[in-house]
Amino acid sequence: MKLENSFEVTAPPEEAWDLLMDVPRVIPCMPGAELVETVDDSNWKARMRVKLGPISLSFLTDINRKDADEAARRVTLAAKAREERGRGAATATIESTLAEAEGRTTVTTVTDLMLSGAAAQFGRGLVGDVAEQLLKDFANCLERQLTPAPAADAGEAEPAPASAQQEPVSGLRLGAVAMRRSFGRFLRRITRRPPH
Image (cartoon, rainbow, N blue to C red; front, side, top):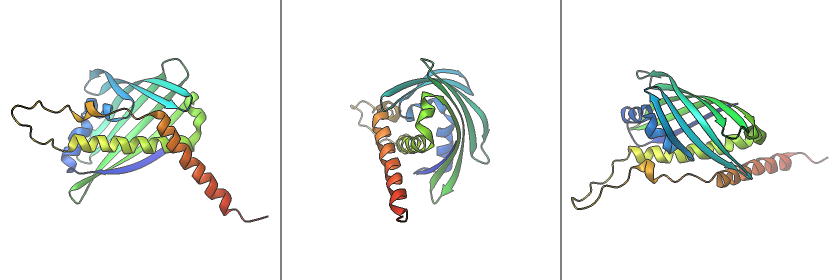
């Protein structure tokens, strides 16, 4: 399935690009994700925990930066994930493009996603809604990373980095949000049907 999303951050494209290229800083911005290992400048290992209703899944993920075009401000990541208890797998190619928008930056992502096993049972509508909610939380975290912290007084300790303060989003809450949206779409469809 293909998922297309966009969001804006309050930073010029140059700053947003520098952050996007710093994958170890970006990974913790995804709710439920943690960096496990930096293999080299273009490869990382991460773990992502997701709870969808009664099912809790933990994916070990290999991330590879396939392409980075600074002039076009476009980067492509490939991810291969396997569920730690063998209950499914996922592969994704994520292309992110940055564009200037009146002093801000619009980030557009196009994700080609393939799921198998337990995760695939939730279908296109639910996965799309969960991905949309994840992206909103991801955008908020990037915004915090790009916002300069207020200067601390000499006697005060520096605040923790934004990524350390980011709380993983409950997959159950994400699932509930997605279910409400899916149910709302279903209700709109049946109320639009002409009477027999």
